[in-house]
Length: 224
Length: 224
DNA sequence: CAGTAAGTCGAACGTTCGTTCGAACGGTAA
DNA sequence: TTACCGTTCGAACGAACGTTCGACTTACTG
Image (cartoon, rainbow over the protein chains, first blue to last red):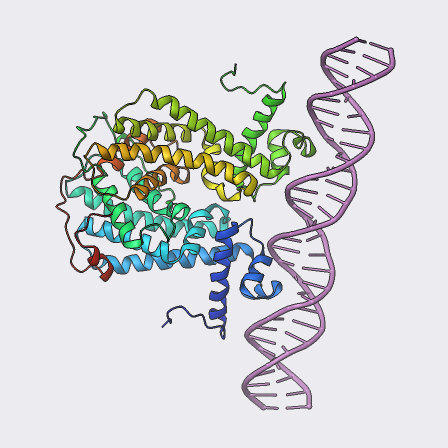
């Protein structure tokens, strides 16, 4: 099947991937609206009009980057999850997979995290649908974890989206030169999410009356 | 001094605030690059050229929104913190203040969180400087909390930035109709950050042996 | 009253944008 | 050779962009 990374310019798919890689970098640096097709032409070495042989519009280009990235990360996760049974193990696998992918494909993941609203409605729904599946998967793992009986009462939607917040915010601050690599990062965030920083040593926990009253209502919204 | 909110169109500052409010909404909906001055003209009811009497460029407009919002949230926090002494109490105050402000000024906070890179370098540094102060404040509280001795060993930079990730991601998913309001949200996120979702009830730190090669190496290590 | 300053805006400026189009290329098959 | 097909690109299109400018109105001062 596919080789490691070196894109093969000889066939259509190979050159398209080459363009997608450079386009993702440009979008991640200047933002979708801030980047021009001319920027992408310059970065990829393909002429302005030549690009349109490989995609039909700027929107479609963004769509291709997002859908490819999202499909890829979700596929990897599902592969990883077949080996994990215990809910906590599965959650750690999700975090590890997400962060590992994030640091390995920073441009693509930044575009995915940052430019979700730039996509318009024929394409937007399709990406949102994968996002929903990803969220539901995480949510399922969380619910399973809860059923082990060792969990405080927490609004599950808020909890899962907070976890995604921790992970997806990484692109705003992570500096490979000073910050931990994927393994440690995943370890730390899993630890914070599962046990917190104080590890229940101190707080007699203030008793909110009904923390998850709103948990009943759902409505599947985006992950982000 | 200043009234509650109703902007006074009669003086310069009042009308500028009026414009800033509408501009923040437009930026939050279409993105900085995606929004045109004409959009802001339409939204605010001020003519295209009339806007330039109140700010000198689109960049400056973004700068004004960001600096005002950031200064405001930081000032509120400092006011709140004088009453809080214990590190945990101070951290809860920070989370509560941040989220409360977020939900009360969603457009401005989205612009602050989402459009930080759109600002260019005369202005950018100035906003970055306030951001740094805000981060240092949070970091200081975290270090104080650590000194109480009831904390697991966690990379403090990663921990604090994870907390900000949880909070700043809110604008991507929060729906006032189905999600908790500020109090509950702050309560939940503080709880997750401090004690985690499992509250240390279960884990003697289960070590899945062969999840994959990377995870195993980190084995029982808590995290640095 | 005339004179000044603050505020407002229509019309236009030069530039850049996404996209199109037709001509040209290289390789293969007859 | 001619014919074809996948690929490439220079040049141009109209539209939209941020910004400017000068004329105009309004409100206050003397």
